[in-house]
Amino acid sequence: MSAVNRSRQVSDPTHRHPRVIEPVVLATTLGLSVLGAVVGMHMITTLGVTANTSIVGALLAMLIGRVSVGGLKSMRSPHRQNLAQTSISAATFSAANSLLTPMAVLFAFGRADLVWPMLIGAVVALFVDGYVLYRLFGSPALPAEAAWPPGVAAAETIKAGDRGGKQAMILGAAGAVGLAGSLAGLSMSAAGVALIGNAWALSMFGLGLLTAQYAPDLLNIDLEGLYLPHGLMIGAGIVALVQASAILLRRRSRTADAERADSTLAEPETTASSETSETSEISEAPAADEPTAPAEARSGSRGLAEGLGLFLGGALLLALISGIAADMSVLGIIGWIVFAGVAALVHEIIVGLAAMHAGWFPAFAVTLIFLLFGLLLGIPGLPLAVLTGYCAATGPAFADMGYDLKAGWILRRDEPGGRRFELSGRRQQYFASMIGFVVAAVVVALLWERYFTAGEVPPVAEVYATTILQGLSDPDVLLSLAIWAVPGAIIQLIGGSSRQLGVLLATGLLVATADAGWLVVGALAIRFIYRKLRGPRADKELALVGAGMIAGDAIAATSKVVQ
Image (cartoon, rainbow, N blue to C red; front, top):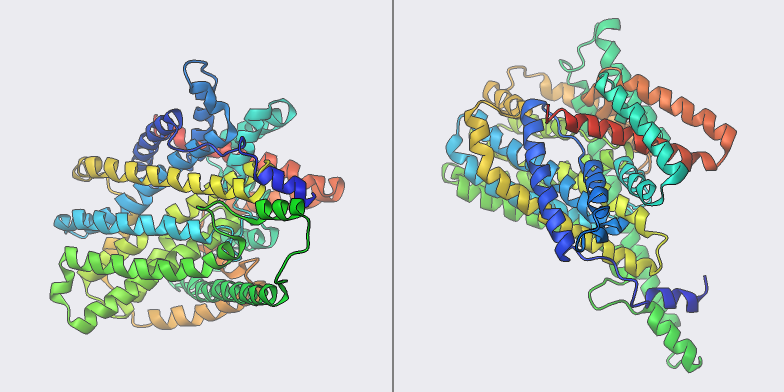
C-alpha cells in the first residue's frame, strides 16, 4: 500500500472505533457484566471452574443488534460486539477467580474478619493485572500474532455472525459438535484449542495430559507425591520469565539503536514537495492520546517494571490493612512484601504464557507452587494465607483479557485506519474490561457473605487453606522440587520462548483433565493430515472449526449454571 493511501486511511475522520461510553454500548456492557459476575461466582462455588463467557456475550450482543428499536441496532457492529464480550468475560473471571477465590482463602483459613481487607487487596491486584496485560499485549513477550485460541474463537464467532453464509454454517456445525461433546463429559475446548494453537506447545500439553492420566496406574508413579508437576513448572516458569524479560530487553535495545540511527541519518532540511511533506506528516504523526511505534515497542519492558512496582505497593497496602505487619519484624515484613510482589508478577506471566499458547492456564497450580515456596521459607500461617490470596488474584483476568484483545485484533486488522484504529480499539477494550472489573467488585462485595455462610466456597480455596494449616511434614519436598525443576528448565530452554514446551508440559501434568490428552493428540493429527491435503488454506478453515468447538464447549459449561 502506498504512503498516500495509507495516510488517507489513517487520517479518515469518518472511520473511528466505537467508544465504550456510547449509551447503548455502556448499557449493554453494564448489563452483561452483572450477568458475567453472577455466572462466574455461581460456577466457581458449585463446579470449581469458570466458563469463558465471552462467546455468550458476543451472541447476546448479536441478538441485541437484531432489535431495531432506538439505537440497539448499532450493536450489529462487530466492534461493539467485541466490547460487549470483553466486558462480560472480564467480569466473569475477575469475580470468580480474582476476587471471590482469594477472599475464600481467608474464610476457609478461619479468619472471616480478614475477608474485607483481602477483597481490597485483590481489587488492587486485579486492576494491576489488567494494566500490565494492556501494556504487554502486542509486545515481543505477548505478541498479538500468537495463538490466544479462545480469542480466535470469539473473533470467528463474531465474524461468522456478521457475514453469515458458509462460515456461519461451519461455525454452527462445529459449535454443535462442541456442545454435544461437552454435554457428554468431554473437554471439547481441548480439541478446539489444538486446531488453533501452536502445534509444538500443544504437543507437550497433550503429552502432559496423557502422562497425568495414565502414569499413576501403568507405571505406579504418584506424580503429585513426587511433586513432579510442581517442580517442572517451577523450573520452566523461572526460565520462561527470564526468556520474556530477555526478549523485552533486546527489543528495547534495538529500538534505542534504531532511534539513534534515525537521528544520525536525519536530514536537517527536507527537499520533498509540500504534498509529500504533508502526506508524511499525516501518516506518521499519531493522535495526541496514542503512543508512537517506538513507545509501543518499549511499553513491554516498562509494563513489567511498572507492574512490579504496583504489585509491591499493593502488597504493602494489604499487609497494613490486614494487620499482619503488626506481628512481623521490619525485615520480615519487607521480605514478605518483596516475595508477594514478585510472586504476583511471576504468577501472571506464567499463567499468561500458558494461556497464550494453549488457551488453558494453570492458575491453581502456580498459586500452589508459591504457597509451597512460602511454607519452605517458613512464612507463618496467616501471612502465608494472605500472600496466597494476593497471588491467586493475579493471572486469570490477565489471561482472559489477552483472549479479548486477540479477538479485537483479529476484527480490526483489516479495517481502514491501520495501526491507529487498532490502538484506539485496544484502548476501548481496556476500558470495557475496567467496567467489567468494577461491576465484578461491586457484585462480589454484595454477595460473597451469602455464598460463604451457605457453605458455598470455591474448592480450590479450601485446598489452599488446608495445605497451609497442615504445612509440610516431609522435609524432602524441597529436594524433590529442586530435582524436577532441572528438567523443566532444560525443556523450556530447548523449546525457546516461542514454543513454551516446559510450561505447557507442566500445565498438562497439573491440569490432568481425563481424556483431554487424547482429544488434543487426535486434533493435532487431523490438523497435520488436513494441512497436507489443503495447504495453507487449512489453517484458516481449521481455526473456524476449532472456534466453533470452543464456543460450543463454553455454552455447555455456562448452561450448567442455570440448570
